[in-house]
Amino acid sequence: MGDNTRYGVRNLWKYFVFLRPYKWQMLLLIVFLVIDKSLTVIFPMLLGFLIDNVLTHRDMVKLGLVFLAMVGTNVLQSGFGALYGNVAALTEQRIDFDIRWTFFSHILHMSLRFFDRRRVGELIYRLEDVSVIQNLVSGFIQGYGSDVIGVIIYGIYLATMSWKLMLVGFATLPLFAASSNLFLSWFRRKEQARWDLDAQSRALINEALVGIRVIKAFAIENFIVRKIKHLVLRQRKLRMEMQLAGAGKGALTSFAGGLGTYVTLCYGGYLVIRGSLTVGELMAFFAVMGSAFGPAQRLITIRQRLQGVVMAAERFSQIFDEQSELRGSARALRTSRIEGRITFRDVGFGYTPQVPVLKQISLEVRPGTTVAFVGRSGAGKTTLVNLVPRFYDPDQGQILIDGQDVKQFELRSLRRQIGMVLQDPFLFNGSVWDNVVVARRNPSREEVEHACVLANAHEFIIRLPDGYQALIGERGVRLSGGQKQRLSIARALLHDPRILILDEATSSVDLESEALIQAGLKELLKNRTTLVVAHRLSTIINADLIVVMDEGRIVETGNHFDLLQRSGLYARLYSNLARL
Image 1 (cartoon, helix red, strand yellow):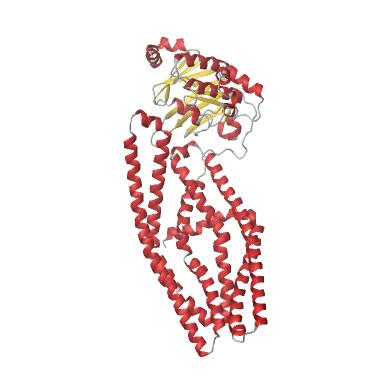
Image 2: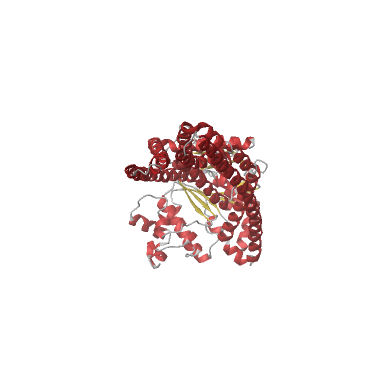
């Protein structure tokens, strides 16, 4: 096994931190295991006694006593087995919850840069790695721990009976290990390739289902099917190779295991013929040896058995060890209300270091004013406003709110002061009520309905079959574009943010819907600092300040009439908009 794999095996130990809260349950399980394995040895001992001292002397009294002892041992073993199984199952379920909750919580708290680098389908597939880690931890409870205790107890019994016969019986274990390890590095490479193909196919299927409307619109079903078929055929070929190699490996390990059985039986027979061992003792030894051989084989080949877990742990660590770059100050500020003054000081940013999107942006936004950002597509407007709630941090410069760097604020406290209405509002697969109250805890019905009235959403909501409890489908598929946008405005109104960000909130709806949305926005904008990324004239003309951007820089600022008189970029953009 290579250095990377050895490091991976050592790296697994850090996941046993999930066992720490359950140390008393673990101790109890160890006690149950010791008792269970000790009781397992009693039956072969009784079997040997039965052969040597009962059957040969035809002693009916001893036969009855042996029968009672066997039944009693079986009752005790079954009882402790049930106790062990229940405690183990309960502990495993709790550990499984801890691992999944920790991992999913970690993902949700990562920055958008993290999600920019990864496909959703891949992240969903990574959740299966969480199951592998959980299996490692639970395997330690019921698998590896049981094997270790079993080998120790069985080994003590075998050594006291005949240490020479024990050595002969275990002599073939190195051959078993060698035959297993022969395929180890090859299987590791193939397993990684299989995982990569599975991740690619799941990501592609996820994208196809999410983008089904685009696929239908462009009639590219056959193209997508061919791409998926190509991946599936590669997966099938790889799995066939692994199955054929697995069959060869299984034949070798089976031969090695069988050889150990035959050698033990023959040498034991030799000891019986010489008088060093009785027939009953040989049978008892052979029974215990059979119980010990399986755990011993599993422990010898533990690295091979762990290779899938090692690979899953490495993939898991790529996610779990990555920390969000959006870290707050050690003395993060918490605030229940801000004034809403926003200051950009020489801000520079790029999604990748080689390609800057924003360059030396400096701007002062007064509290309670509306600032519209306009410019050609790709000028950096959306990127700039996304820096305010710290979806990303600037590479250069600072963004201040009320004179404090946004990095000084506790992240949740900062975002509670900011509301967003986007061009494509995201709605959850639930009821109207659930989507409006998502950012507010336990609002009254009057508050919810008031927000919906102000957003011009109440009338269409009460016409739905179940009103506020109507289910709207995944991403609000049962609503029109204008209805979804009005719900998002109602959500923002109920959230009551001090800073509002509107990113082309009306650009994808018809004029009638826009009129209703604009009426809702009029209420939403009152007494709030508002940053507007807009293409429609109606959301530009009335802004207190218009910021014109081009190629990541601010090239003009002023109100609508001042900018028109300058006959610059804004005047040209306005002229183009007016023709629409």
